[in-house]
Image (cartoon, rainbow, N blue to C red; front, side):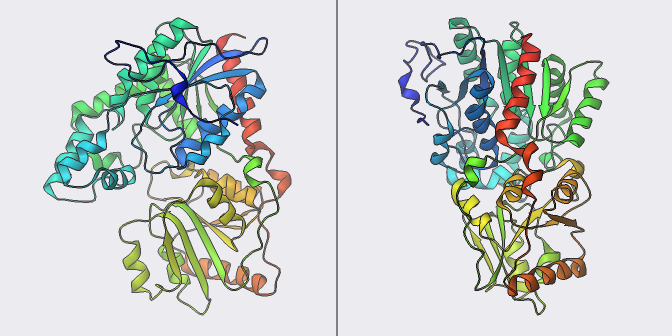
Length: 462
């Protein structure tokens, strides 16, 4: 696997907009391979959940007759870094990086924060402060940066995409969002006749935090118009769950369009789970949560206050009220919150956990469609999963794979009973198992890249 040394491409001299390297050489193609431009804001050295899907596609698409070129940013406003993910990019895959304005530098100036504090504050939390600077920044984010805070990259991405296509035409273009502004780069090529596949990893105009943006009616109309243009003009759409696909199909039909919407779920890479799993910790029963915790799991914390001596370890970020909830219950010695760790370290920690925690926010209007990306690596780890959330696709997957169950997030007694069953088995030296290995085939990243390749061949007419 190679590095992401974008400096291998010569800079387009004299160009006032395109400031990064642009590929002039040709990618070595297998006979009949499709040449595809993959447009993604999140790409190594970015870390976090959003980078996994496009990076794993790039890793495995060549095995399915697709030769990708990646178009991304040179220095993005990333909430996390994980340079080791670059090892997933095959040698010879061109990675073209452009300049991109940094919206969080502006946010930091408005609020008196450092840039890094601004990235952390705005990536997952909108509308949590009433301070004047925060209100101004929120208004700017909601009404100037439409559809999202990364929209300033679009002119840079469009110019680079057009130049790359003019130099050596692509058979198709793939865009993945969020940030959904990345789709506007694909739309520019589609309007020049390039078949376009748009990937929705999350909802767009009805994302869970949209109500906190306080948008003007004009900004809201602009946002929905942009989303509608993507759904109309893309040759096909893919998304991550069947309920979300149904919502998108309804929206497409409401536009009078016929854009097909396919489901290509998130998944796991067997290469990331290779090797013998570490033993489950024997000195204490440890529940592990990896990633961003959007809501405080009060039922779990309440269940932990009884006689069961269990520990919770969070690798990532937590809501502002989390620490207070822990302290109110006297759990400070049994709950640990640690910074986000590299992906490889997170997977290793999952594999050694007695129990893995999965949460889905019931208040979200599309909660039945939410399957957190970590779900699939939880399954592949072989460890059991305790889910807290409403019925939906995530709950169905846990049951279908025998990984665990999704409980009502307010059911303290149910959570306590589930914990007790796990603790008893663990104390006896026979911790309960997780997902059945035989049920994991559809969630293999290699197989999913084949599904994407099939859609690309369909829209490219090959």
